[in-house]
Length: 288
Image 1 (cartoon, one colour):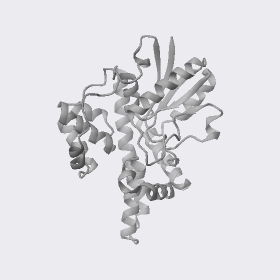
Image 2 (spheres, rainbow, N blue to C red; image 1 turned 135 degrees about the vertical axis):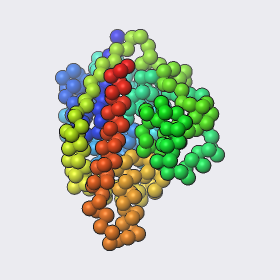
Image 3 (cartoon, helix red, strand yellow; image 1 turned 90 degrees about the horizontal axis):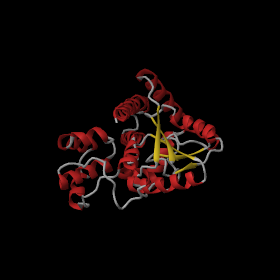
């Protein structure tokens, strides 16, 4: 029987270190379940694990794309399924760890299917703010809204595209016949480790990690990424890049605006909101 270990938790909960510890103890290799760590150059903002922190444990699906390329949930399902087979064949334990819960769902439950791309609708939706996109998903399909990252424009637009075509986003409980089916076979045993710190502890961790990231040069990293990809793509790369990008644009227009002092509390609040969304997914995981 093929065995896999899945480690999930909200941002700043200590997933990466726990995964390395488990890998060293249980002869494992780590598969990153993170939609942003696949991109080269997104190091500080994604808290990408360093070579030293890996302690010699092989890590997969990190730094495999350029930041201007697109890596989809379908790509992840295909890559992760192949890696699980490969790692298992070597007699090691595949350990999947990360905070992109949509990827966990896609891998373990299947991808929504049945709706073709709608370029005209996409062009219309691109004109809306991220908040309005999420509000439309909430109104149209509350179940899908409870699962989706409210800050990920690409997934919000895709959800609205599927809703337009099918009326709602189908639950991810059917296998996409176009994808490898390893994880839906009876011979796969999935073990979970859920790291879910108390709220106050997690909020303290988020603030401490954010301060450290800013000290390490997060703003400079966002500058570099923005120069490569521009505003639209930067906004797709997660909270840290979107919020700092917005502050940098304001600072460029109003150099005396003292935005630096407002950046940390604003970004901390957004990250906490995202962490709460992740904790909600973890609660639902316990109900399955």
